[in-house]
Length: 117
Image (cartoon, rainbow, N blue to C red; front, top):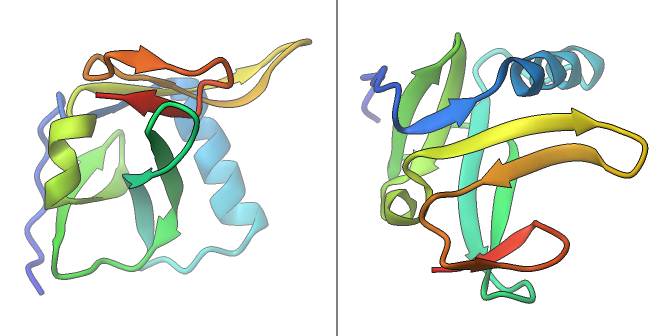
């Protein structure tokens, strides 16, 4: 398994709010130190693709990035859909959770968790 970590700032963008919430999740859920934040896509959702966001171990097919001190894992094949995407955390009266601002999406659904490309 390759251990090189890229620090390209344009791969995935994590806002300060997202990083704060992710660090809270790591602490609250006792996520193992060797895990990274997995960002990906899967087929499905009302617009064609759904986002994947969670903590996981590094796999051979992953690219590894460091974004604001966080280890980010992404399957090489998902880069075309995700490069340049911003992940934010909102905590408002009408909406609470992670928000995906994806410049590669040609359309999104009303719930904001799926997109078409």
